[in-house]
Structures are given as C-alpha cells and as structure tokens.
Amino acid sequence: MINRFITVFIFFLILPGLVPCQQARAGEKLIYTIQAASFKGPKDATRLYKWLKAKLPPANRQYLRLEQIDAFFTVRAGKSQDAESLKTTLALIKKMIPGSHIMRAYYREARIITGVKSKELKPENKMIHKNQQAEPTVIQAARFSPPLPPPNSKKFISDMLAEYLPSTETANAAHRQEAIKLNARTPSSPSCLTANCHAGIIKVKRPHLPAQEAKCSACHQVKKNIHHPSGGKNDFLPSGSIKKMCAKCHPNTSVGKVIHAPFKEGKCLICHLPHGSNNKFLLPTPDEDQKKLCLSCHKHDKITGFKNMHGPVDLGACTFCHSPHASNQPKLLRRPSKELCLDCHQNIKKDLTVMPDIHTPVKKQNCLVCHLPHGSASPNLLRRKGEKLCFTCHTDIQDKMKHAHVKHGALYLDKQCATCHNPHFSKFKNLLIKQEEALCLSCHRRGSDIPGFRPPDIASQLKGQAYLHGPIRKGKCAGCHDPHGSNNKKLLTAPMVTSFYAPYNLKEYSLCFKCHDSKLLTERETTTSTRFRNGNRNLHYVHVHKEFKGRTCKTCHQTHASDGPMLISSTRGAKFGSWHISIAYIITKSGGSCTPSCHRKMTYDRAKAHDNSAKAVKYGKYYVDYKSNK
Image 1: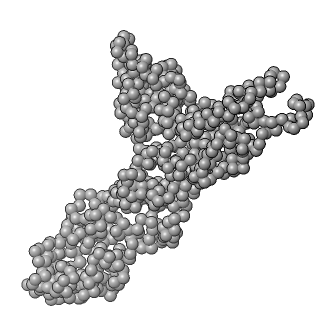
Image 2: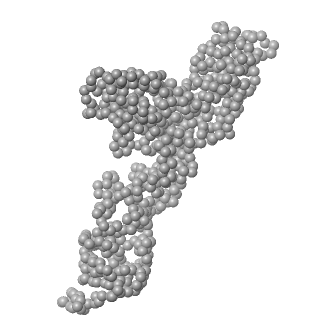
Image 3: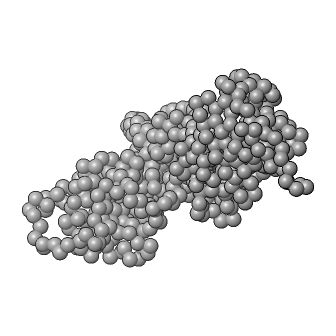
C-alpha cells in the first residue's frame, strides 16, 4: 500500500518545482481537492471510485472523479478555491480511507476518465446492494491499512526513503546479519546497562544492536591497569579505529569512485550516534528533515533559501538523490543525474522517446546544464532567467537581437524565448510549440490579445485565397522573415523594395532572387527567363528597370496571397497609398492582358508579339491622350 501511495505523493510534491508544463493552461483552474488514493492501474481505482459514489451522501459527492495522471489513476473528490469548505467531506472520506488528504492541484477536464458533478446527483436509495457491501471491505483491507502519513508529517520522509531506497534496506539487512554473527562471538556485559551505570544508552527507539544486546566489548576495551569504574574519565577506549571497528559489522558499506569525506576518513560518528538514536540509521537528527544534519557541514547558501526550491530539498530528503557513503557518480548521486531526474519526471521521459526534435542539451547532456538541483531564484529551477539562459549557448541569436534595427515583438513578451519554443522537445522543427504557420498566425491575426503589441493581420490576408506565395504554401513564414530580428523592413531576411515606385537597383530585390531568377530584371530581351514577355521583350525589365520611377514587385503582385494567378489580385488590386489599383489581369494560353490605372489596356503574347504602339494626340497645352493605331 505504502509503495502505491508514496509514489504518487512524491510525484506531486517534486514535479511542480521542475517542469514548465505544470503551469496553468487554457481550461485549467488551480483548486483545492481531496485526494483519496492513486493506483498504478485502472482496475482498483475504478472499484474505489464506484464504492465512494455509492457510499458518500449526495451533498459530499460533488465533483467525485477518476483521473488519469501520467501512469497513475487517481480518485479525487471536491473542487473548491477554499480548503475549509472541503473539510466536512474529507472527514467522511478519511473514516473510510485514512490516507486521504486535501491538496492543491490543477483541475483538468481532459484527464478525467469518469466523474460525478453536483448537477448529476439524484436522490439515493438508502439500501445498498449486498454486492456493493463486500467491495469496501476488500479495498480497505488490501489498500488502506495501515493509513498513509500525510506529506507534511514526521513519518512521511522516513517511509518515502524506505520505499525508494530498497538497496539501502537490503544492505542494512545484510549488515545486521554480519552484526549478529559478530555478537555471537562477543561475550555479553549486562552489568554495563544497570540502573546505576549506563541504562540510558538503550532508552531510545532504535538502539545500536551491540548496545541493545549488551555486547559492549564488541566496540570497547578497558584501559590497561585500570579497574572499571575507576572514578576517572575515559576508562573505556574504542577497541580500534572507528573505521575498522564499524567495518567489523558493516563491511563495504558503500563502494564507489566518489566517497563521502567523513566516510573516507573513518569519521562515522560525525553522522551516526554510536549507541542508539530515535531516528533511522542511528542519525542524530529526525528522519523528516535531513537538512539539519547535512547542512551542519554543507553551506546553507548553496542549498537553501532560494525563491524556488526543488521538492526533495525543501522536504529535507537529501538521500533521495545522494548516497550518504559512496557512489560512482559525481556529487555522490545515486544514479547518473539525467536518469535520476527522469525517475520522477516521467512525462518528460516518455516524450523523449517519441519526439522527433529534441533540444541538444536534453539529448546529449544532462538536466543540470540548464537547471539547478537544489533551488533557484528563477522559475523552474533555471540557472538563469529566461533568455539569459538561452544566450549562454545561442550567442548568435543574442547578437542578432541586440543589433537588429527591426525587433520582433514576440521576443519581448513575458515568456521571451518560450513564447515560440519548447525548451525540451517538440514534434515540430526548431523546437517550435506549434507548426510554423499556425504559430505565426496565433499573433498575426485580428483581435490578437497581446498588451502593447499589435502585429499586422496576416491571417485575414490568407483567408479564402486561392493562390498562396510559395513559402506560405509550404507553411514557411521564416522563408522570408527572420523571427529573431533583422536590419530590413518587416523582419525580411534580405533587402526588398516595399514602396510602389523605386529607382532600379538589383540589390534591392535580393529577397526575391533567393528563389526567382535575377535575369527577370537584368535581361532586356529573353525567351527563357520569364513568361511575362511580348515576343522576346522582357516586360519585367520594362516595368522595373527605370532610373527614377521603376515599378516594384508590389505594384502588381501581392506578397502573401491573392485571389488571382501570379499573386495578381483580380478584385482589390495593388495598394497605392490609400487606393487599391485595379489591374484587370487576364491570362491566356500564350500570354495575357491587363488594364491597370497606370496605362491603357496592353496585351502580350510570347509566341507572336502584339503591337501596342500608339500615336500622340494633343488636347490643349498639357494633356496628351494615347490612342491605339488600331
């Protein structure tokens, strides 16, 4: 029983200090709830849920539910912002399940397998079916006796250690057998423990085995030429060095490359009492808080007093992670640090096996690259807060953000890098929290709720459009925009003319020519570089290649999407200040025509050039109208 329950209690105590995903998400509320019990499988959890549903009065059955939390199945009751309001229900449940307790947790609809809310309650028949009567007896006997100590009780840490450190318990049993053999060879000295002498030695909960069985000579010897008691001090001496003496019963207590300094130096009595203790392992401090012992040597400022504390450290369960004598791991860790972390953080462990994109430190290094093991001033036990931690590796991004003329607003929101990236792993490339286009449009949409930040509404530009720009069609906004900052307008990755008119300069079209052929603008005549030509006359060259008022790409084409082919809008047209110029573009098999507001209707054909010549007819002094020869 203790094994099943303690596993779950530790999971909830430790996890909030380490995992970002413990933060509230949409649809979650931080509440008080009654945790009845948790199981490693659904069968027993379902039995308990049905039993409570039958036994509890309607008024105390509100929000009774069975939840799946990672690998555990948990039965809970109640849902309140006030712990006091749950105490009446808790008292009823504790009579049936002594280990029940009130805890703080997120209420997540998604993980509820089955449940009863207050509006679903119906008057009950007071008579309970005889088959239902047998279930609680079985459950109580098999699952809830003896009662589980609450997480803040004195007994909790000692029980937790006993369950999670079976190797220690096994070793202690072996040591005890060695001690029994030694005691059998050692004469008893019961006179030492008389009321007038050393009776107080064994008046503790856990006396040392030799002291308990009055085998004093196993560890002590009388000084030469002294008849004890002599009236002097220190008549009895250790029978040898403390290290050798302890090794008689505790051979090879721990073996490893890294040895705890007191143990290595044979100073066992720094941590252990020689005759007995009220605590486990003959320790001088209570089981529920090992910090009192460990911090007598280790510096407080490196372990305690942080704003955010690691769960085991805050509870004082130092030996949950560290071996007290020796280890093959640095810092006396019981296992490699990454394995140790994942023993508790099962959700991360599971996703590491399935996610296609894993952050390099997580994949190739250990958790301590980014997290502090004991406590931190930063959330989630991070070594440094937010982007400062990311920049310890991503110096190129730091430099870009620092010197970019155009800043991306998303990088300066509260979550900083985590606004767009998952720090551990993702199903999307570059650790994005969503698919690239969906992530960008979560902000670049109408009504985006971002205080102090109003990104352009790109979602509306794309909605319902039949023709999408190539990168957009592939969902690659970063094909043209740099999400971390740029020296170009609109975070563009290369120069691009964004005005309606511009003097011709090939470099100003660098962005377009990442994909398109630059011969579009450099060749006056061609038969291969563009389809927009009249015979072999390059009409892109005609429009753009002008010394003063060259027509830019924006004059005819939309940048993201359009309802017409070639990204030429058939409805609104290109934007000229506050006016949208109609182009009236018509495409044919070998060419096409357009009638923009810039000039009269012009046609072109790639196979046979059209004659678009005109003669000038003067009207008055200033006005000239151009008429076709036809």
